[in-house]
Length: 317
Image (cartoon, rainbow, N blue to C red):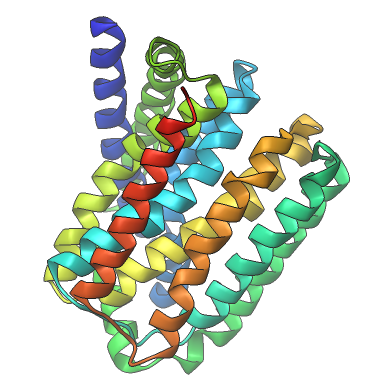
């Protein structure tokens, strides 16, 4: 048990380092190819926080543990909103000026509902996976087309997020090292978290839903708190909403499209997916009001997250 915990902690450390290195390397390479910085930033803001989850899910699929991958993909969305956004808002009120956030939240709500409806027959089929992937491509295209509508303040914030130094050689090394760190760290997570989960009475699905999702979110939660204190509310909210859309459309869609039908237990459709939908629904008044997520609202999100964790643990008995 102690060995499994230590390997898990080291795995989380490697995932955090790998994700940060990959963002810097990809940003540098994209700028070297003369891709507009703001376009690069839009993609990286949404994808950056999902890199650890994507690596874990890839390793889980390779090892044949689809339940762990499914739990992690959906659990990460709950953790993103409840823990990451809640802690960030509690640290400092988040001022939101990014016009694309509201449409992305609508996509998140629709995507969560679509995954739940598609799973009513017991799983996500290959065709349904392709549909989710096509929806993701449409979202990326829509976001890119709307990029010109953003304010100079948002553009400056995103440009600062992707700012990096070094030439092409250094950035290639960053990407290669990042890929190795993500793959190794994800391997340790997939190999040892189920052991911890089984000791606590969890199956792979719940271990991915709770343990892996919370563990992989901790480095991002710390980064979100730091971003909130620097006044980067748009980046924090973009991370949370964008990565949640990424998890549902690209990660789950890719799992089904590439690996075939992904089994989804009926209990998961009845509880966890509705909970993920409700957490996304909590953001609607926050984005339609005065465009500021206050400390009180952050506390509400954290309280909802704590209640969900207690519920999941209570159901183990």
